[in-house]
Length: 253
Ligand SMILES: Nc1nc2c(c(=O)[nH]1)N[C@H]1C(S)=C(S)[C@@H](COP(=O)(O)O)O[C@H]1N2
Ligand SMILES: [Mo]
Image (spheres, rainbow, N blue to C red):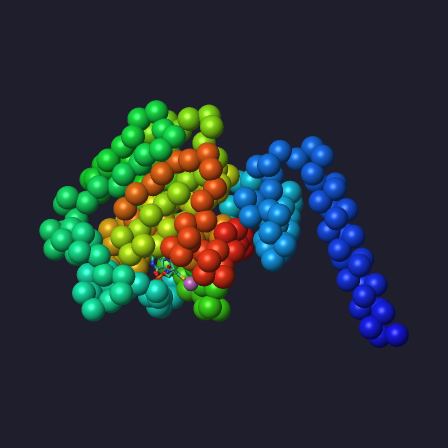
């Protein structure tokens, strides 16, 4: 009897999902579903993505905090790409670091009218934005910090993204790679951060520049940025990406 109930319930869930898919699909352009749609193991991602996109206005802001809420902030994952005993050691980053990142450039390329090579000075010359937000790591901890940077959207506008563009891929010196759809890339709180709590971004937290994606879980905020590529095609980035490491591509908070 109990078993039957479970079966029935599962059927209900499945038909619920199908109904929801049916409801959403007819008028649904592919951009209203995550690129991981169709993978049965990733059904949960589809629901989070669709629910967030349907229920929240695209540009809803995340909560910002008071300076007195700023907390201690552990560094995780890679915390020094210049450590040659580390498996993600980057000689390139190490050299740039030793010269105070004077030669560091952020490459913005792909489906853009004008590819850019931005120095730290170039980025700091764009309108700056400060925000005190909570970071949530998939491992269960959270921390609050003040970030200073430029809107990713401003950089993309400066490069002139082409109409076909659908994703913004970003690559780090330690191999970390991820992507955002256009809604999150142009979210007003998605910034390229060069400052943390009023100081230059410290090495453990991603110097010289990290992504801050305040609308999603911590691992989307990739540190040690090197390259941004605008594209019209989803890439899971193999073992450098979230999916193969068991994480969701979309993980809205
Ligand atoms: N390049 C790079 N970015 C990264 C990581 C990493 O290991 N390398 N770890 C991610 C994870 S899982 C989290 S929770 C945050 C941690 O940021 P923090 O080290 O500033 O606390 O960075 C994210 N970005
Ligand atoms: Mo994390």
